[in-house]
Length: 113
Image (cartoon, rainbow, N blue to C red; front, top):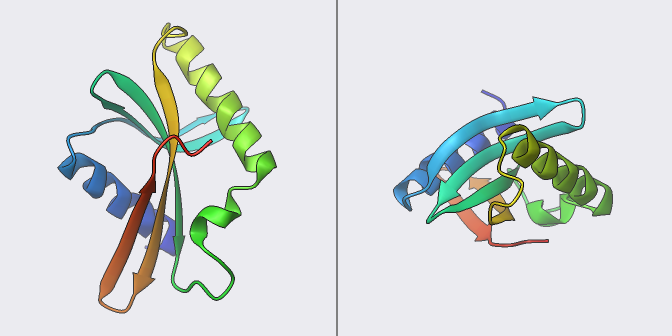
């Protein structure tokens, strides 16, 4: 399993333990992809997962630049429209994962942008 897919699986398990219901995995449209779509306490949460095996080139969340943010926002709006939930409460989170030998560091940035 590649690093990205491994990170998404870790993020999904992490969110599930916190009571999130996973609605979609790798949701795709012509606008791009959202790693995870979840529901938590009535809020639809769009999750961008960034995984690294080292922080030598910066924290994983730093890879979510303005262009990536714009694409994620567009995807979130599209998802809500298709689901008929344009008025639903939602937010965008980033989960950054750093794989360190046998350990894993997970940080959830809630309402990241």
